[in-house]
Every structure is written in C-alpha cells, then in structure tokens.
Length: 122
Image (cartoon, rainbow, N blue to C red; front, top):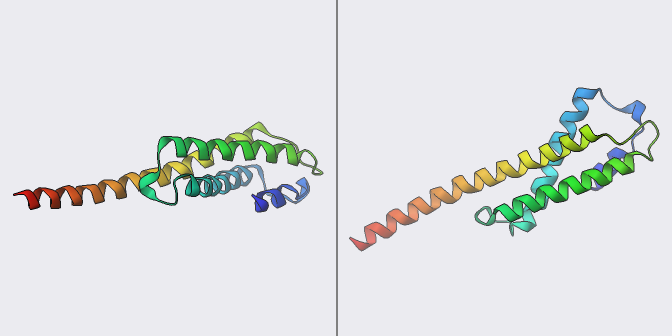
C-alpha cells in the first residue's frame, strides 16, 4: 500500500500512456488482493473461503478509492472511476487465481486421502 501511495504521488506528466496505466492498476491490485487474502485465509490455501475472498477484494477496492482521492491532491492527476474499476478487477482476478489454486490443491490432497482411507478399510 505504501508503494501504491508513493506511485500516486507522481505528477501526471511523468506517467505512461492510458493502456499501460490500466494494466498497471490491474497487476498491482491483483497483488494487493492476494496480500490481503493471506492473513484472511490464515496463510493456508485450504482456508480460502468466500468470506475471505470477498473481504480481500472489498479491502482492495476501498484502498483503491482512497488512492483515487489521494491522486486528486497530486499535480496533473485526478480521480478516475475507470482506474477504480481496474483496481477492483485486478483484485478479483488475483484473489480468484489463489482461490482456484487452493481448490485444485485441496481437491488433489482430498482425493489422495480418500483413496488411502478406502484402501485401509478393505
């Protein structure tokens, strides 16, 4: 969040073009969403649940809104709803990727455990 705040302090005339701006928002907020998810899921893929996912995305969007307000105090910058949408989409994609990874890993482990349990009963 400190890096985002610092980057938001860069004057508008020193920024890359429009396309790259949205891509940067997407990637940075994907990382932020994942970083919020880590403590919410107690740093365990098996604990990634809907509530943790939704909270991580919500916190990311709230920080994105704060960041847009902060930009209004930076020369050559202004709040942009499209930036906030890119922030939210990035957070959702980053968190969804971890959630999907968790589901795959958990399912794979569960399948192995079920297989062992069934063999042990035979």
